[in-house]
Image 1 (cartoon, rainbow, N blue to C red):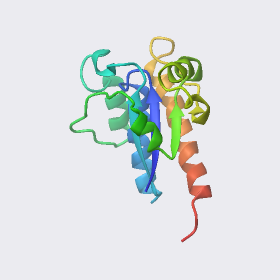
Image 2 (cartoon, rainbow, N blue to C red; image 1 turned 120 degrees about the vertical axis):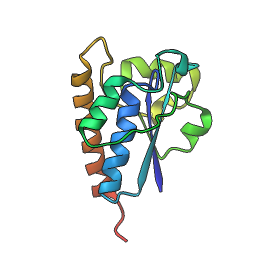
Image 3 (tube, rainbow, N blue to C red; image 1 turned 180 degrees about the horizontal axis):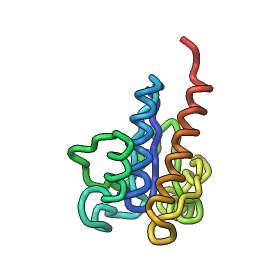
Length: 148
């Protein structure tokens, strides 16, 4: 099983949505990948109230994805980066500098998307953009998956 690591600032809204949506779509497609997610800000679990954004929960439930006991946001570690086959940071201008500062040498090994956070855009717009990107990623990985 290969691993995708989704990164955002607080591991609360964007990366959590990407992780959980990806895992649902990958399972449905029998894709040999599993996603995890983490935050680039130190002690990201202190940034927001609760374990996961209410916007993320509502959007996942609207797509038929059950999230019964969400975990707390977690900080990315060097082990997370080293253990990933594909690393995606959801907003390049926000996350590349954080990677350069905290994990020198990793910034060039990351694929960057361009998904704004709340309040720059409404939650539905950010999550809609993420959904399109995650679906495209699943399609890409399916096309490139070795035939067994």
